[in-house]
Image (tube, rainbow, N blue to C red; front, side, top):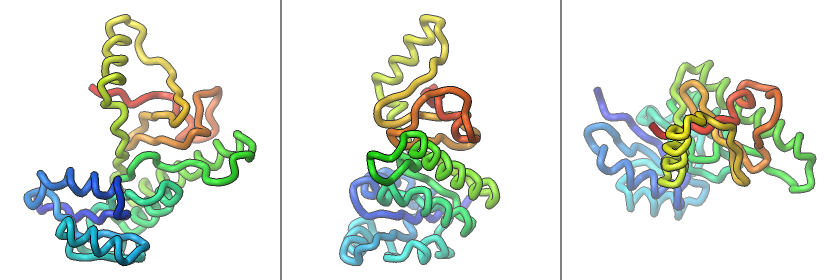
Length: 207
């Protein structure tokens, strides 16, 4: 199987973290094919540092690049869902750094409106991925953190099983082929209103 061409969107901390962790897979399984950032100086510096041959300032150029098979979204949080949708529509597989999406607006907006907006954004990503027939991967590493892994072991040992979970910063979900995290407005509650809402209350536990 040929190495997958990865296009990274973003050129700061998260993007650098992802690029470094691809290194053990280069060149047999992964090629860092392109990077995109709005700031020309930043993207060119990032490309030089990680030996990436193509540097773009327009995300449309990256998602349309024939050498890119997978778009790794490490841009600002408010753009995650938009970039993921553009990548899926271009026929690219998608990796999204946490959070998948959320509500991005004034803090005094009604909480239900915040939640509805975040869930619409999440559903738009899932719909785009489903229609394109591509794979969506969600980069949420917190569930593998030692304290969370220990909590899972304790729950298993107690026989309590899975519990609904919510946290001040996000909610975790287990859904087919993807995990979805929304912003702080997402919370475990009653009857869900959408596909992403139906799944949002369950943590994706490490095995």
